[in-house]
Image (cartoon, rainbow over all chains, first blue to last red; front, side, top):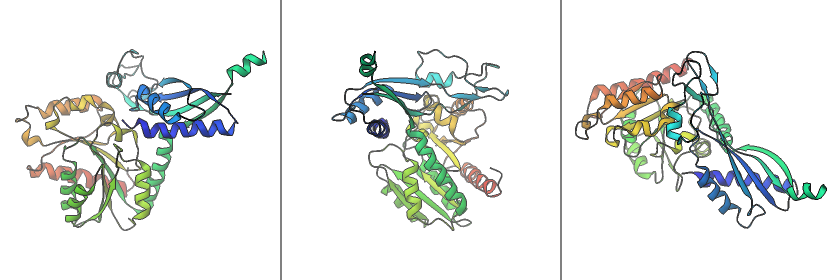
Length: 122
Length: 230
């Protein structure tokens, strides 16, 4: 829903880093998206492309890496949740976050990142 | 060999997190409010769930004991702001325009323009939305999510993140639950299944005792914070 304003921030960091490294073109943009952030990568890519239009990043390819949140459980466990099915949508995913030790639905921590991890430039 | 490397370009690591930028600014807001001794509450919730009405009730009850300020956030904030102004509290409208949520930047600007030094409580009414505000920390002390029975009893499970990340959940308009064929207890059970630790209040403006519970929950949280327990 707010992908456009987020995309402006991301593209800004792409173009700043590209400029600082004297790039003539940005080939690839690698984005990390936390699974607990309300960000839809397909919409985000659409926004990023439209913002990049007319810049050295206009023909860039994108890859999106999904990041699991960590969980904190009453049983003392803190870390990655039990494995979930990749096919779940965000709603099913969050509900299905379980502690790998005791199987309880545990408190969520993190998984809300949204960052440009790296870019590939010429 | 060089040709291949050049053709593939080179990788620059950035690691710039746009949400982290917001969180950094939110931490600054939190620090500023703490210094000024202001307890801040971010009230999020569905459109038409009764956020404004609940804040009005809290102002009526707390306004005589404490100095209260309100940030009225909405796409067009003037209508809600007018309701708060009538109650004689410092009212700061925050028009978000096209944005579906308040962010730390908007709040930071408003805190610069308005001196809250002598205030006890700041209510921040977020834009009616159960999704977007969840991603944006404002620097508040307490996050409250408000839904009402008229949104249907599946509204809770449809929006798990906001219930997992809030400090208090309110299910409002329980006086009309029967008319809209909703059992509020189902909604409470759903909230608890997502977040076993979160307190849940059932409220209605028409049931005085529930309004009292709502006001007490905020007042207690404020007093605990001021006593350094939160």
